[in-house]
Length: 138
Image 1 (cartoon, rainbow, N blue to C red):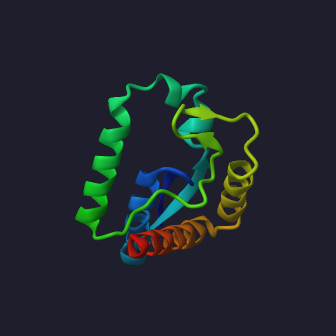
Image 2 (cartoon, rainbow, N blue to C red):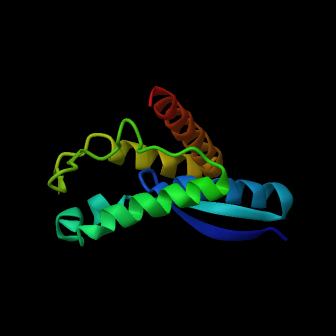
């Protein structure tokens, strides 16, 4: 009997990107199936989050993500284009969000058709490609 589990995944979260290979490996190696549940990023879910967060949080996040990516042997760079429209300096997240809604609904539609993890794998591969491209430009 196949075991299932819920996989909550954000198209903007660096941690979602960094974790994607694990569920893929689990499904390959064991009789388990991810029930992909795309969620809106924290920037959209919590109004004012980035304006109210401790200023040290940003540097911690950058260091933690870089260390985790290095540990996993994955390239990492900020998503480009960013699926959230915001002013990174002020933390202002604009009300009008033309990308993340469509992207999250695409993830939900893929999940309904049993292709959620495949889509996440492809999105993560595109993000990794973008990260490698950014790294080469430096």
